[in-house]
Image (tube, rainbow, N blue to C red):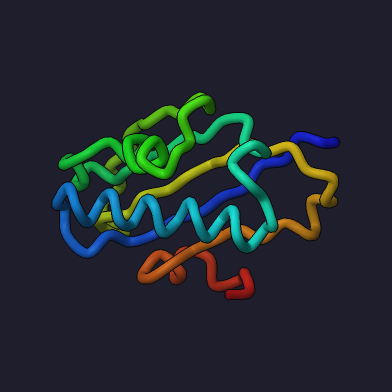
Length: 120
């Protein structure tokens, strides 16, 4: 097994607790599904949020999904002028036999514009 890193991002509709939790769940589930991973494959997940998302910790959504024994960290993105608003990002470290070239990073909703070089 190798340790690999996966990236993902999603633009949240509004800064409400429900929207942040729903978007985080959607993003994390898509990262796992598109890479044929299960929660036991996770080593750790770092979540970041743009400064305009403050209503809930994204890690709480992962805990609600049953991911309770994986180290999770929430942090803030730097406040770059003109950056896309309301974006949650993740960096997941996983154990997998897949080569790096076979991993699928996930960019959903408006955040898909951040990485137009990646297949959807």
